[in-house]
Image (cartoon, rainbow, N blue to C red; front, side, top):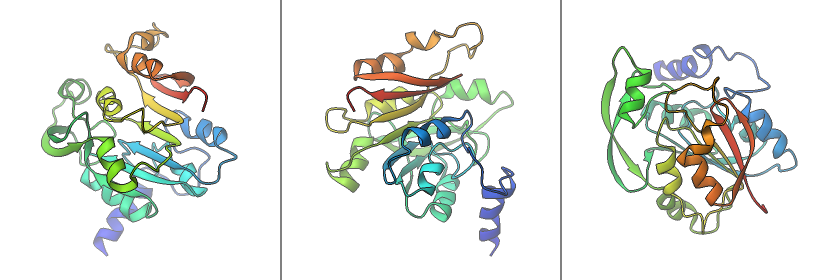
Length: 231
């Protein structure tokens, strides 16, 4: 009973979600994605850095209408919440990186959207100090092959990993798996957005996706959505 109440507290009371909402994401990504896929009742998403089943979540509107997917996070408690609330999804406590291994995690609380594998990002966001731990990491290729062989079609790949975005992208074989849409954060190294609206074009993440045959179709501040050409 105590655990059940704890889950309800973190799911609804703490983020102040008491009624259904039109949008659950931070910057309106889910509204755009829901409209883009409005004719598609079923679909498959991958959420790397899923954080919370509702609050700040880009895939919940799709989940509500019948989609399912696989969610990853470096917070064990985050995955417990997903297991409790998103039972149609596969939810995995693991970091995603370009190769298998163990990595240090930097965090302030056990569930926080800024928890990261990047020490420099932690120093920027957690100025009053942070905790550390160890988490297993593996590639998207590994998990997709393990659970889905080569048959899965990825409609949406969402990545929010506070500085590890490029390593996540490199963990996917784009010749085999070809996500239709990629929702991803691209940060200015100086964390200044107002004075340079084109900073992202020099970023390695942007260049990587352009080289993989993607084009930018939506952006808001540090959040970007790319579409695979001819998909």
